[in-house]
Length: 130
Image (cartoon, rainbow, N blue to C red; front, side, top):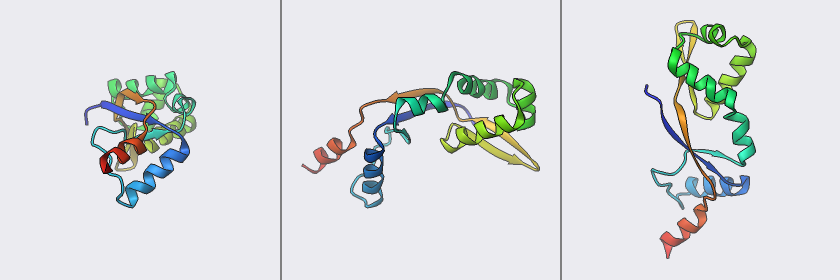
C-alpha cells in the first residue's frame, strides 16, 4: 500500500453531527474530493498529528517494520505507549494495523496531509437544491 495525501476537514462538532445525519438520511451526498477525516479544532488535529507522530508515520513508511515490537526497537519508544499511539492513528485512518499470524504490522496510510478549514457543507448542499 503506497502512502498518499489525506484530506482532513475542520469544523464544529455540531456541523459534523448535522452533516453526518444529512448523509445518513440521503439529504447530502459528499463529493469525492471532500475530506473523509474530520476534527473539531486545529488543537485536536495537532494533538493527533503532533511532530512526534508525523515522524512516527515517516519512520513506518521508511523502515517498514514487521511488528509493533520492531517499531518500538527502531524508535526507542515504550511498547505500551507506542501501541496506544498507533491505535489512535489507526482510529483516524492514518495507520493500518495489519495482522500477520500472531503479530500486528503497522502500515502508514499517509505522510502528507491537506487540511481544509472553513468548510461550510450546508451552504453547498443548499446551493444544489436551489
